[in-house]
Image 1 (tube, rainbow, N blue to C red):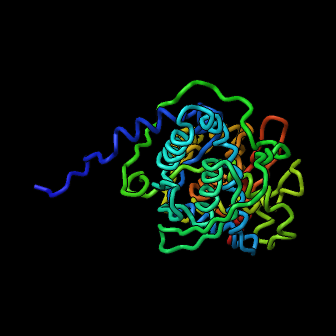
Image 2: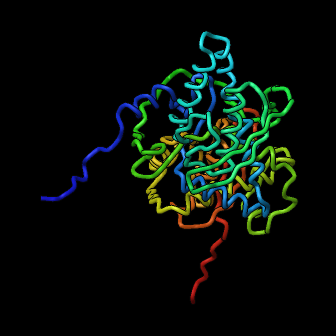
Length: 358
């Protein structure tokens, strides 16, 4: 008799139910909350790889950019909680609400009354989320310094400032940064969460939820950071109708998202066009990446169409990774931005010419 049963389901039914009662899966594949914010599920090691790849591509440390992007996006997302402070026992209820956000998103368990947090997040990202959380709780601005005591423990030192608390600006200059229409239709998600001592996991892999606004703020905050990419990167991505100021940050994010997918042992097998649908569901829409529509496929290229949505950069990058894994070839990609859609045409990077041996 075997000691273990491969069919044992280790997921936390209550946690999974609470999670999918709070977040909705749209027909597009996006994961949204009640306020219309878009989210994506990341495995911890994949998120750390993403940061490593992105930083390598732009050849510059981005710890401060990650921190600022995390702080600004979470401050905007939690701004509706400001009203809680005005109610009876407002601060106590606000504290409880912030703790619940951290726990449900898988970021860690923190009481915010001390200067130490326990988290699975990358340190500078956790510091950004911590800063916006403590500022909301205390209703004033802080300057913070942080140091990692261990992989999961971060110490903070915070100092009061005299600054006012206007909300960060929206990214209105980025056309895909916010969802234009969010439906109320829920799709059933097959993703099940497993409770850990710290955070939660999916199929044994430590995971958490990340706001898509965070990734778009990285692009925005890296504007003009990179003057020119190496030839082997720039020849892979052709952008049409994109604002030039964001192009390099956008390309770096596309390439990093693709590399993350290719770094894992993801098996992709396509016999014909009909296989693209279930493949996209398996690798993308279960985790909040938006689903593209296949519009054309022949021997020379594959063409997809996306609606504009906040997860667009990481979704396109992952899709190109799926295409490369399925075809066993490096890809070059032409991305054309329209008013409401983006066309993505994927070609083999290298052309193969077969000569007659005779």
